[in-house]
Amino acid sequence: MTMQNPSKPKIPSDSEGHFFRTKDGNNIFVYDHTPVQAYEATIFIISGITGINHHKEKEVIEQLSNGKNRVVVIHPRGTGYSDGKRGDISDFSLFIEDYIEIITHNKDYKLIKPTILFGHSMSCAILLAIAEKTEHISGAILVNPPYIRKVSKGMSPGFGEYLKYAAYYIFARHKPIVNMAGNPELIENEEDRKESEARANDPLLVKYFSLHTMLQSQKIMKHMIDYSQKAKYPLLLIYGLSDNIVDEKGCDLIYKNWNNTNKKYYKIENGSHGKSTVRLADEIINDWIDSVETNKKLSMSTLNEYTKPTKLADSNNPIIRMNIWQSPKRF
Picture 1 (cartoon, rainbow, N blue to C red):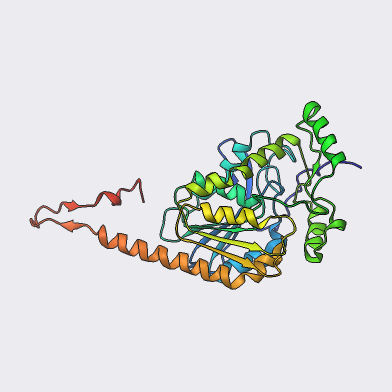
Picture 2 (tube, rainbow, N blue to C red):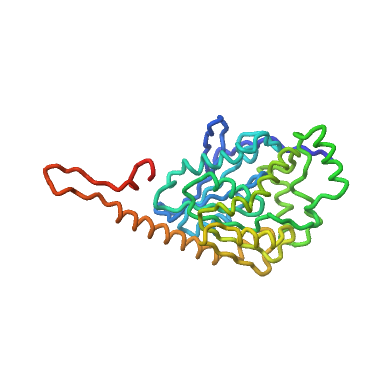
């Protein structure tokens, strides 16, 4: 069997989106869904190492947007229309830094409109690594974060594969060899199986990864509790009780260790590892986003009242006294 990722696909001439040029000269594709001019919040959908096809995520994008929120989808380096080697991320810190650059250069960053991060499965770990180095995050939505994983049919490697991986790690650790798509035929949940089949043949996604990249991504996942203990932003944690890949105990630990007391945790009946959990939690997600928007407006309103400039008594000398929090470097 050939274990080779396809080359970067050519972007269609009529494709919506633009490229963001990173500090090291890579072009990263960004899709920006803005339903209304006066949108309420900006929500970044964070992707894992396999990438994301924004065309096939319309349902999730529309759900998060709810007709009033801006939703931004990024093709991470080495995936989709973005630059970068397929299947082997030599420096994982650059993968994280790309997201940070794009988020902090976002036109709403630091302003009254909330900046919310959304992660699903492995991208939850990527999200936490990004947020730890990003100050002005208004909240995070984590769906089925894989801190503890189950042995699952179609997704977990067998003994023979582990032996093969050991040999490649010694002799060719940068060669893409690990099939992240798994074997869809063996996946028990019908909806997850169909999603996996679609992803396995998607030209915008990456299927095979090097042992080097896999170990780097594993390190990020192992630090999820450390990130949670330092998190300064609100959390919405959602776990699908029919998830055959992620263990509920890991989600319990993330919630228990979350530093910010503004946190909510929901367990969804019949929610699988895939999109069904997001769909079944539609009302929960939208209500939580609304609450983040309301809290942001209230906090900024209070701050604006507190920092109003005050004229001194001498009207001929219009010196303005300004609170230190009004420093343009801060806001």
